[in-house]
Length: 272
Figure (cartoon, rainbow, N blue to C red):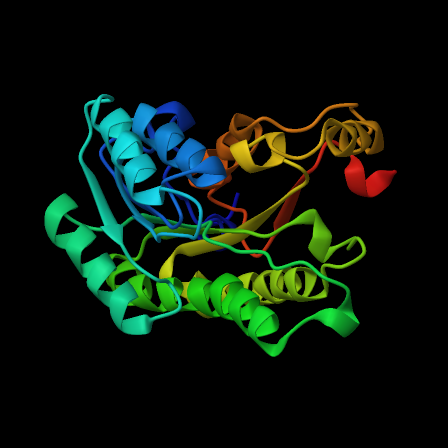
């Protein structure tokens, strides 16, 4: 091969084994006290990653007590953990939360934007408040968190961001105009952020889960759960770990060349 031809081939470091790539790093998981967020936080902790997560008290749910249980479970994995009450809709609160994690755990390498709310209803019945709260939490909240970690990730020329969208962004059901819109916007934000941050070595992707067997889903009438199982090509509803493992993969070195993508993890629900 000529010297000119050799120069055209740029050698790059070989990827590290994905099983070890999260060890010793720091992840922020928004809405990490319960449900899918809790599963994600524990997934990273079990892989040797220190975890910072936020939570927000909600009517009828003792989220603070559940946050304490999640924090205890994470620390039992032998890693550091910081749990902070924080409303992702507030940029000031997010900046304080991220700063606290950075100070206590030594940095930020991964951000998982999981925090989200729903206020379902037919379009003609949606109140301005229901529309605003869903959009501000699910989209603006994710933007606030990405904005808060961007400077550090750009400075270290490394970072992974995964946004939790939904199959409803691709195939909405009845009565979810605000939620479906917010998740579709989150996918747009994912792609735009991937373009803006890619030159700094930061990967930005999204996962779009179908129905996930969290405590909220199991509280629904059995016929609704059966309907969801029947609609899936695989004939089942996802366990939280089915989603958290894909998120962990997107943060691993095995996925270092994936960015701006939406990984649908719905058991084939959007194929039916």
